[in-house]
Structures are given as C-alpha cells and as structure tokens.
Image (tube, rainbow, N blue to C red; front, side, top):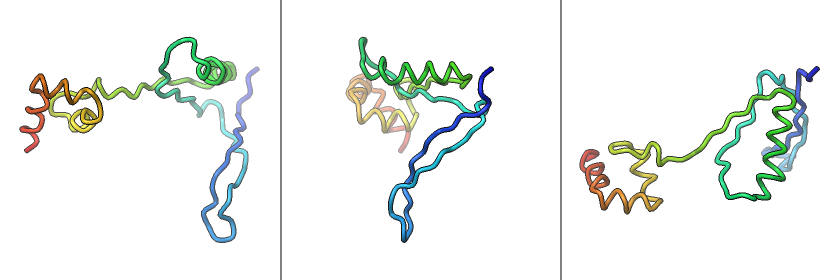
Length: 113
C-alpha cells in the first residue's frame, strides 16, 4: 500500500538578526494534497536533464500517487489582438516583428490609447 504522507527536506533563508543563514527542516505533507508541477519541459531528445532528472522525478511522483500537472508557459497562445499580455510579451520576441508586419501590433497600440 502506498504511503499517505511524503516528507520533503526543505531549505529556507532566515532573514532576521541572529540568523542570516540557511535553515533546514522536513516538511511532512499528505500525498492526496500534493501535486508535482512540471513547467516548461521543452527540449530536444536525447536531453540529459530530462532523462536523468525530470523523468525520475515524474516516475517517483506517479509511483507514490502524487498527481502530475504539466504547464506550458507559452504566451504565443494568448498573444492576441488587444491582449496586454501579448502586447508586452510580444516586444521580447520575434513576435513583435511579425505583429508589426501584419499590422496587428499597430491596431493593438491604437486600441489601447
């Protein structure tokens, strides 16, 4: 039978006089209240980080019954006309050039004025 709790070693910074150093503890959590968030796992294969670090963590989580959620932080999917996230994020990527060439960026700026 699977364990009902997981013990996670934690490290935290003690930001107060007399400490100003790392503290260490163990956090005990009920497994049914935990999830492993896998965020932005991209890359080519073979990928040593994915194979040697991420895959074993996913397998271990699944083995003990922890839910796994995949989250892909790809703002291209929300960078639509009139969306402020897309407007600002687009400036940091090639997307700004594409939107500018198609006139979308111009329409976004005019709508926000």
